[in-house]
Image (cartoon, rainbow, N blue to C red):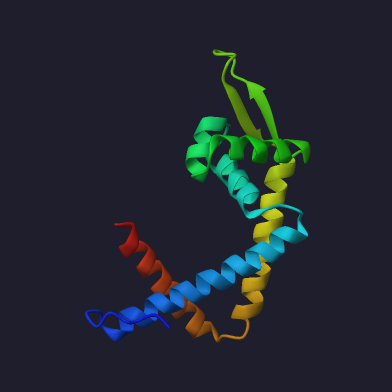
Length: 148
């Protein structure tokens, strides 16, 4: 068991532990869900980034994924073979390779997010409406304070 630093109030320690526990459950459930779709978490992350940011060079995608260039290249190869992304040469500089999400990739993101929401809906159905609103309010507050 980890030693608790006595300089932190107990509620801070407990909140941090609960957030970590929730993140672990979400990550675990997410991996199981992605396996059902035949995709890895890094592949899903790449699709989400491309969907959000638009077409990117392999280098830009590598930076956003915090991975090695060769790892990103292999990841894009697999996504391209599955029809989730397309790779093409830049019109202005033919040496630059860009990656763009395809409709099949965007559809996959929506399916996965819908499945995540369905799971969350099942969990939250066991919580009364007032408590759901309280949880949302606290999460919004935490997000706001952490984003400052």
